Length: 314
Image 1 (cartoon, rainbow, N blue to C red):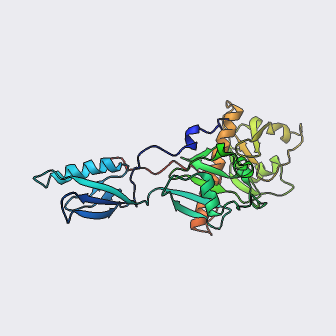
Image 2: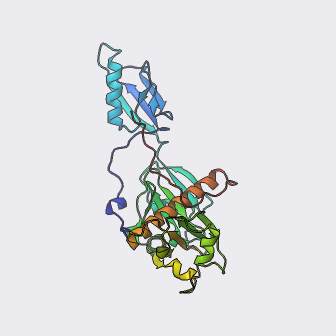
């Protein structure tokens, strides 16, 4: 699997700050006593200053914003103005922090912040060390709709700073509670679902409970993914052999992911990576939905979650 951390993730970003909805900037026309004003970017990414119509600055740097204001103000002034643009408040750079924490919620990234700093500050892992209420092996960071291969056990149990990535806007940090005992059935089944774990759960029983296989399913290559998200074990099972009694049914464990592929032409490692990405997206959507509306019905496996929200196409 491509589960090696990029070393660039371990350093704070050197990219200039880009504005987004909710950010607060101060614009001052140098040499004009009444030329200073504080404005907030609206949901559409526009600012309203002086006589100017709404200027779209979503995704712009402060320097680019200054040049835009200078150009637009020049249309109304005989003398080309000399504006200064300063960042006064950050409202657009946020990270989701959910799961096993009393401080779950959405937080602003006002400064470069590592995963360790964020989790420790917000109470996701006790300062004295992980306890039995947290499943570090299945905790994760999601970025751009994909699983970021951070090993929470190495970071929080062993103090391995090679796993201490810097968070980026729209990252989703999920510290998984240990008492979540589900089995996840995904792929080419008629009813993808999270099924509560019980000791009698087997591969056959969960696939039957999921409504059976779809028409173009590949029953000879059913995958069971087990273990931590960064070091999973995957077994490929010929479900046909179980159905005809050629091999014994496979007992499942809490947290197992069962995936029935549509295509037989898939490398096992690539399959495992795609399964984990889908598991992470589903978990993230459910955690976010519960935080907003605790009584909402769970989203079943198969949900698609895209990347970061960006500026509208002009």
